[in-house]
Length: 391
Image (tube, rainbow, N blue to C red; front, side):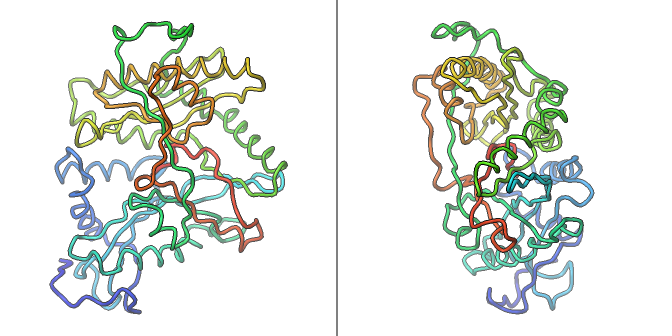
């Protein structure tokens, strides 16, 4: 099925079309791309993982769509799959002129072509077709019936997707080493690191994803849009977005480290200072690829140097908990995407060698803005461009 031993049309052929695969073709895609992304799983476990992720709150009921580029004249289940990808319809906010509205925006991921179909232009054709399709995909209930924006995370630099409408946005991170209790004092530079406490999933839901917390996020966007003509967008950092990431780590942990059980610690906080962070563990093929990612940081913006110092110290205490958890689970590092100045300050309190690194080739945060055609302005600010939004 899907044999490549046949005539292959050129990438600009009108015979090529972007379609949703049949169930059998979906499995073909997963078997093919498992070679790239299964890590320490075997192919069957990888397919189980994908089925597991497909049934999370963020992805179920059709929110996630798989796409394939094929010859329109060939029958389903018996046609070469020239390229494939996925799109995720996720809750997002748009703020413009002091008004905030909830919208559906798409994240694009798992872009893949078999080796024998590479360097033929099929990936570019698929992405071009996808850009057109996403303009209206799952927008039937929206006010404008059009997509406002979509995002992807490029692992092939900034040019390929940039030429097709996805502009590269800041893509930086700062790292901290794992540490154990016996190697780090509970007080560093006068900071009481013991003030940070662990959070489990229910704590994260209560402190970071409650209706009150989400309303505060909306208020931030509303106020920002009153002070600037530029539109503001951001993915809603709700519990569904976070639990999708946790579903990945929980699946891996059962297979790779069954004796440890599911990871229960999902974040850390200093509640008295209103500082909260949450994370997930990425189990990679090698120790270097195993990373504890900070999904989201939440704190009140300091209004004075003294307040900034207090917030930074609390963040340091919470991040110290992340370092301990990274050590516990054999992660190579703690990684925080696009750290704010106060988060950077906190990281440097914990590690003198911590430096912000700017990515140029991998995990390039890229956004396609359609707002200009919809009267929302030439450009856009992307708020909360953190790991939780990745897909």
